[in-house]
Amino acid sequence: MSDVPAELEGVLKRSETRPNGLHRQDMDKLRAAIVNSPLLADLITRAARNGSLIGIALSDNPNEAAHYGLRDRLIHLTERTLNDPQLSPQEQGDLLTVALGHETAHALRRKTSIDSVQRFSSEIEFRLQQGLGNESSLDLTAPTKSYLTEFRHGEALAELAGLNALASRVRVENDGHLDPNEFMQRAQPTTSCVLGDAAKN
Ligand SMILES: [Zn+2]
Image (cartoon, rainbow, N blue to C red; front, side, top):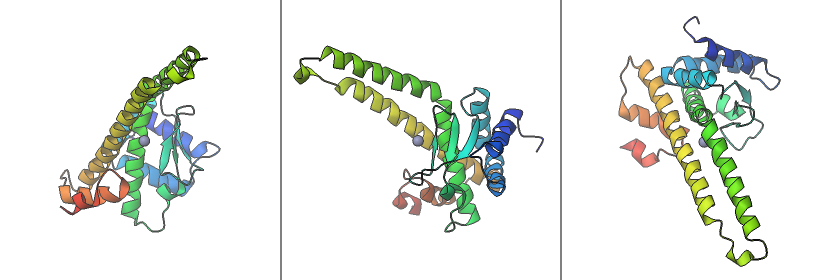
């Protein structure tokens, strides 16, 4: 695997050796998903280079596919994202690719997200202090709106990155060609952003 950049190799190594790291058979899936999507490999390498992603770990929250930890700088993957008995190997790889692309985009926006959370909490604190004794005039609409706008923007970018990572994988499998119908059919089960009806057209 000599063509894997050193930073990406470092992320993979830490994913296997951490206390809640991935099992060996999951590491093979992880490596395959990354290597088979050049765009995903590039995103993870960039996140590793800027220090916003240090590794990948198992998540203990079964109610999600994956999440990125702003504090620990890890992507947390659930067992279902790695080993869902109802999925074929191809579907499992697709799901893993989209989840990794999505969470890596969150990693790349780590600083923006932290700034946004800090700005939100200090504005709320300021307004609460101002409103002391006069709670009826307390209005948290503006800071809440700007926080939610930033949050949704980050989610939209992450969804795009996940789908682009999958498109990159489909393209590699088809010698550089991307069939829109095949792509939509494979994207549909991996994200709530792609509607079933659109996949049929
Ligand atoms: Zn997200």
